[in-house]
Length: 188
Length: 129
Image 1 (spheres, chains in turn purple, cyan):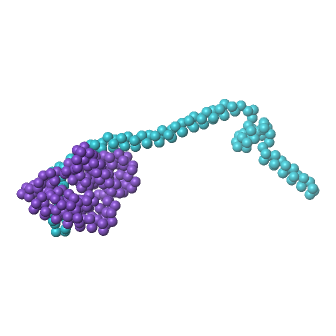
Image 2: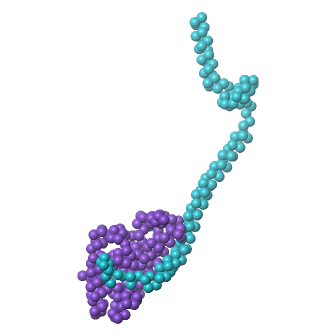
Image 3: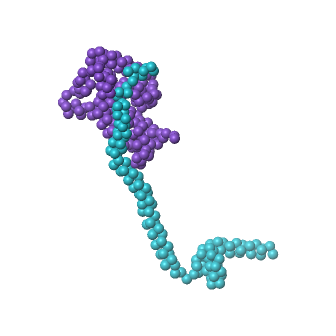
């Protein structure tokens, strides 16, 4: 079956096609979640933000000027909403965001458990810039190519490669440190 | 955490790796929340079609009524004693009647021209003789 383009799906979704909008959700739910995770650093918040972003994107579908580039437009909505979400949370709490990852110590013994691995990876990515986190997750977890990431984030291929290289290096070093001691350190 | 192609193994960050039903639930939640907006859009699309039909009918119905009224007035007001020269020219039966009864509105311009030409012809014929 020929995969329909984002542009075609957007055109149908604008007319209220559940099937077309569903196809867009299936296509971008994982990248949307990962971008939200890059910003919030929390799985639960990322889920809320990504789900909300889909509804907002549907409501504002007429604002998507280039429907063939729906992906990039949608990920921008996710990123902005995730940032707003963080701001609101900080204001609500009246304190700097303190991600769950830095609250609890890392136990290398239990690091094989799924939840611990997640905590460990999030801690390792802490301090990494949002764009590098996004690129790392979209490439190494979602399997997008440099070109696809570049198109959707509005970056040249070379920049994507460079960010990916530094992100991997940073996360590896951080993981080693965390497993030895605890979550500390900043992005070079 | 490191793979042979240089990629980091980040599967621990994919909620679907721990919970196989995660993404199906995620999808269902989004679609449920998007339901009212999708329904609104479908309604709007239907209204747009109905609007097109309605706008056509809004323009056509009064025009048809006006045309019918004008035609009725023309038919009602047509109480002239005989056919006009143009009607005579247009209809063979009227022409026949006109020949029998005479044209009520005087000769048509082309007929007048024709008579003049005939006169000239007669004059020329007379001078040649």
